[in-house]
Figure 1 (cartoon, rainbow, N blue to C red):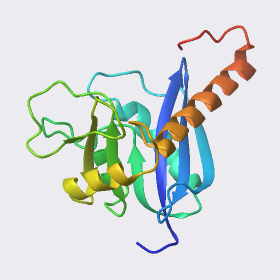
Figure 2 (cartoon, one colour; figure 1 turned 180 degrees about the horizontal axis):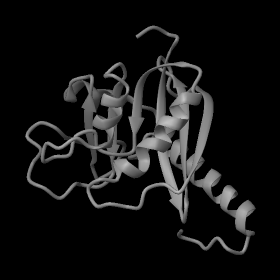
Figure 3 (tube, one colour; figure 1 turned 135 degrees about the vertical axis):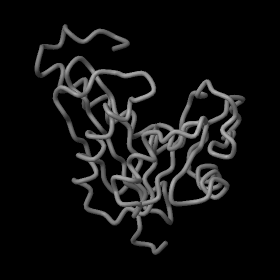
Figure 4 (tube, rainbow, N blue to C red; figure 1 turned 60 degrees about the vertical axis):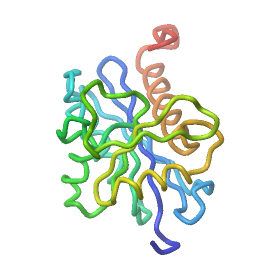
Length: 190
């Protein structure tokens, strides 16, 4: 990677008939250096389908990626790249859609309830957390992906830039919802 390469951390949030993807772009040499934030909103995302949530998130993620001006070498998603049972997850579908030109690393917070992933998912522990993150990857080896995630800045389980992407998507979604329906319509926890 050259210094002009960047990392993009992407997360999506939903409320009623709107989905928002937030992307935090950092310098790859110093991921503490936040270069720019991007968001995209999509009306009427697909309904939730168990084990196929890529149908809901991928269009919004692709839309936010179109806005990114920097040269991104690695895309981090809050999801699995490969599901532990071997099926492609959101990250693998994103990698395929991007013609396998970008590395995609999945950082999942919850264990996918299937038998062991036969080398497709690696549990890692960051900070002082007793709970693992589940790393999967396309375009880079799993051990290398795990090392990259372990080195990402942030004192807690979730890397700081991934948490920032989550907060960006959530706050943008809530702001849009308030403008559309008024401030009293949004309830805590939605």
